Structures are given as C-alpha cells and as structure tokens.
Image 1 (cartoon, rainbow, N blue to C red):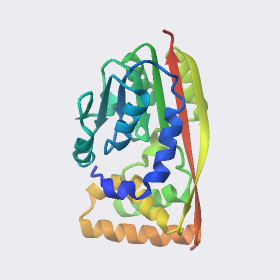
Image 2: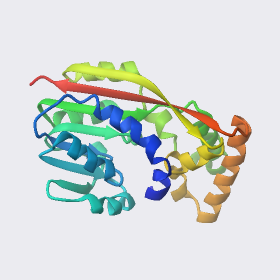
Image 3: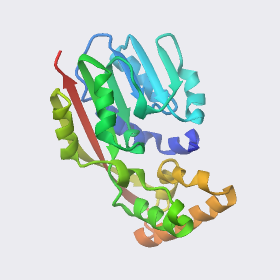
Amino acid sequence: MTWSPSQYNRFAAEREQPFWDLVGLLEPTSAPEVVDLGCGDGRLTAALSDRLAASHALGIDSSAEMLANAKAYSRPGLVFERADLATWAGRSDVVLANASLHWVPDHPTVLGRWRDGLRPGGQLAVQVPTNADHPSHLVSAELGEEWLGADCPPDPVAANVLAPETYACLLDQLGFVRQHVRLQVYGHHLGSSSDVVEWVKGTSLTRFRPLMEPEAFDRFVTEYRRRLVDRLGDRRPYFYAFKRILFWGRLEA
C-alpha cells in the first residue's frame, strides 16, 4: 500500500495520545534495546528512544514513503529499516507496536514470534484499533464490495483484531508473568462528520488506492463521503468515538 505521511499526520495529536498511553504501561528498565514495529515516519520512535533512555532503538516499517521521512530522525543508536513487522525476528528488551499489528493476520503466531525476540524480563506493548463496527469502516467495506466485488480487500480491523480477553489469554499462554489489557474509547472532536473521511484516508482507505486508477479512487472517496455523511448526519462539530485495545506483558527476568 501507498502511505501519505502528510495525510496520516493531519490528526497527529489525536493519533499520538494512544501511543503515549501505551508507553505509559512500560515498567522502568535501564538503557533498554527497543524495537518499534510499524514506526511510520519515525517521529514517535525518536521520542520513545529519548523517553526510555534506550541504548539502541530500531524502527521497522514496510512503507518507503514513511521511512523517507524517518531518515530525518536517524542518529547513532537510532536506526530505521524497511521490513515486514509480522516476520521480525531479533533480540530486544522492549517490543512496541502502536497501531500496526491490525494490518497483519494470525496474531497468535505473530505475537509468539515477537515474544521469542524478547530477552528475559522483556516487555511487549501493543495497541490496535477495534472500531470495525463504526460507520467509518462499515461504509467503506460496503462500497468496496460494490465497486470491486471479489477483489475487494478485507477491512484489516474486522479481519484480524481479536477480542481483548483473547489477547489476555494469549499473553498468559506466551509466558508473560504480568500483563495489562484494556479496551479504551478515545473521543475525538472533529470539525464535522465529513472530517472522518480525512481521518480514514490516512489509514483504512489506503487499502483501496492500489486497486484503482487515481481518478477512480477520487470518485470512490467522493461516494464514500456522501454515504458516510448520510449515515452519520451532517454534524458540526462531530464527536468521533474511537475504540482501541492496549495490552502489555512482561516476561520473568
């Protein structure tokens, strides 16, 4: 998929709060090695490295567009690589994945692989959206099926994200001796219900762009906007209630 850092960061402040809530679950550790799986443009990875006083930080992302921006944050002890977060294998004290795991399937296997990359006493922290039942997702799925038929890509949140209690069970099965799992609703005050379109253009709608010519994608977004506003009502302002799952676990030292 093609990602637009500028589109994604139109709501940077709103997207940043879950990241820092996730970081807040981490227990203090001395000069850890850290990997950020799904690092995006690297801005928060750099801030995370500073916050944890990391001895080494690695940002992984599959988007060339995002990593081009991340170069600005590279420095000794902070590097970025293009790779598939689902197949990452390495050794680290902290593995963090903020708003990225939902893009890949088979979470039990992926989390097991990440757990194997942790040293004794290592910590895993993950945040995923779980709002597939919101009209912002339902309308795009319905429209995608109409326009693309069998070629319509599935909604990754609906297809991949598990229930909070399932993640709790997985953490226990994977040997995390301490854990925290919660469902949290983030309330975002947008200028209008139509602004939800700009939000999802930077995330869930990106899965449609590679399957259409640019003009066709523009028409798709226009129709999506019409249907979504019809479903939500033309509200000004609009309160966007966004559900996310945050979970953390720590291995025995």
